[in-house]
Length: 104
Image (cartoon, rainbow, N blue to C red; front, side, top):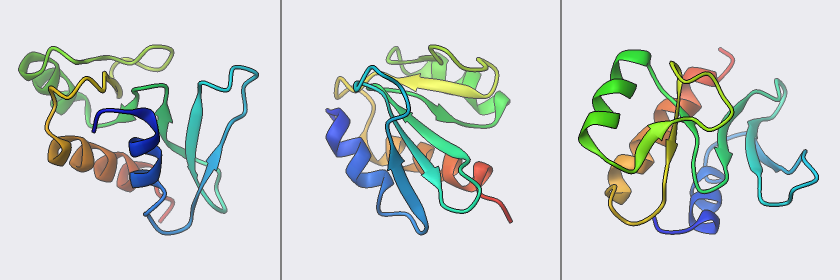
């Protein structure tokens, strides 16, 4: 993935989710679960949730995966969409974030 809209479109493929822009700055898009309103993706060219141990590993593997901008840095990563992280890896990270935040 190389741009924000591509990430938004991918996230919206998941079941029972919606796009939200709760901030004045229209550059932030949140993808939330319907019913619980839990966020699983903050899209400002970045931010997905993952398991803490995996986050450190991913940050070591990719220069464009860094601690999240305004979120808990233990649980959230920022992914800079510059094309250096394979699309499949980003999709897997989004899937993990979706599943972690999904209300069971």
